[in-house]
Length: 477
Image (tube, rainbow, N blue to C red; front, side, top):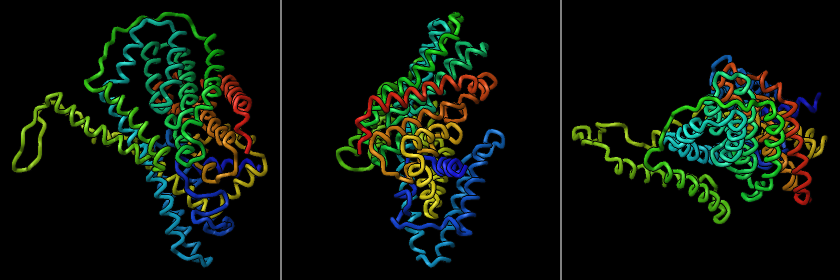
């Protein structure tokens, strides 16, 4: 029970592609400390657990998940500073530690902000709506729709993140057969599994993979070792579930939506931005976030061209000294920035600072010892994936990275795989599943997903064995 509790703490103590501390048993300053038995340490842990309870209950309380963790983060660091004073540690060490954590968060936030802005821009240009329109107007059978949506979820999520991909494919499923409750449920499960599996073999597919890449535990090309294990993770349950999907052909929908001007060029610029970020990291030893922000500048200049090309009508208001639009709103990059998932970004801030504070108290050193020294790396990494279905895969990976256990590349890829696809075991285990439960309310539910959990677990096991077999050479230190 103690190992399980500490493992749950590990998962709770994590939440994004950044790291709060440098090592499993060290603070950000590299000093080994154990303050877990202090009053401040107990209080910090209690506040974090309480905050995460509110995160889990977000659907019932309607309290945005960022608020409790931001509150807990501030309290935890205040407790840490007070505890440092009580034990005689110089105050500037707490200051240096929190600056370290904030700088890590800033890098992550800028990276995600650029990516979210591109996704929102493509959404404004009707890229996703056009794809949905094309699919629902083809007159495919339900079984073919099942396979198409699952496959597209698998191949789109490596670029457009698993949440966006799941929402897009979920909309297709609902448009094709909204009244067929059985089909919607099983197709949504397939989409969630496909989106999470596809995101596991790309640094851009999930927050967890992005974290591992930015931390330098795996190079950009290393993630593609996970392609076949990820493919099996989706393909095994999809094949089994497909036998339970009808061959019925629903009535085709005459819905035609065309992409707006510049949509294809924005997609090209997004790919160019990804190349820029990878190049900054691989060839210039600069943070990927710097490359993403340069890519955001590409979009900024192209958005100016769109406004000119679409011949928007402007007039100059001399008293105010500003340009006023008198026609339709033009494409504006800053409006796309404003539409970023700020609740998610602030949630990341709260969790990263919470985990950083708990790391300074010494809790992650304790968890690292129980997990990786007690169970062994392979068992611990497999357990990480299972627990990620309960807690959420983002917190899981952040804690592992913060502990920074000494592992070969094969083990780092294993925990990347399990943390990414383990969330598919339950509907609440990933952002993709939670989002689809909202959009397909009453059809895709926790119970509906749980019914197929053993089948999804077969895919989970198959992906792990495939990685252990195919990439066996990567497990040598």
